[in-house]
Length: 44
Image (cartoon, one colour):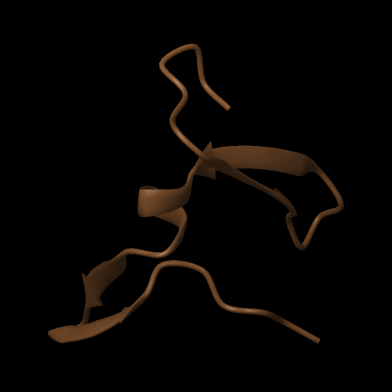
């Protein structure tokens, strides 16, 4: 959690690096080419 107790998501990026982001940012939708999509999606 952040100092203000904001819940975080810890994840591994495609290049193997480890990151954390606020949960609200991790699960938000963004606009790509005019369509709303999840900011992060699982990859194989």
